[in-house]
Image (cartoon, rainbow, N blue to C red):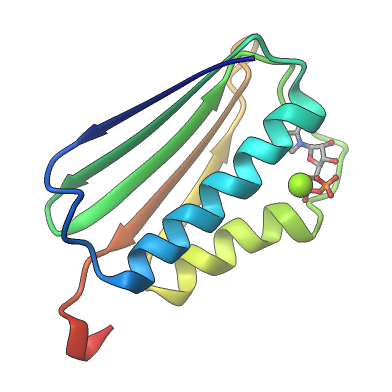
Length: 112
Ligand SMILES: Nc1ncnc2c1ncn2[C@@H]1O[C@H](COP(=O)(O)OP(=O)(O)O)[C@@H](O)[C@H]1O
Ligand SMILES: [Mg+2]
């Protein structure tokens, strides 16, 4: 599996809660790519824009079978984003693997 990580924007001054959520989301998504996707390549991107961190994990594997129910791992992606007031979308374009895209609002430390 060829894994590429890229970043964009000021990633060095994120609130700890946003860093932890991003780390856990990427960890689970990447574990799923390794376990389930049969992918050759995985791109992880982290972008800060408009006071939020956008996290994307994209693979070129087989996609998620629509009949497979979400397990604890997939549910945790949404929960971690929702805890911060954000969201996490999962999409499987036909023939194009899986994309996990989370948006995590960046709040000031005293309101996070
Ligand atoms: N990147 C992926 N590519 C293909 N299938 C996936 C991917 N991520 C998740 N899945 C499918 O979704 C199911 C649920 O994932 P998850 O909730 O993380 O549970 P678990 O990893 O414990 O099976 C997996 O069992 C697998 O069938
Ligand atoms: Mg999993």
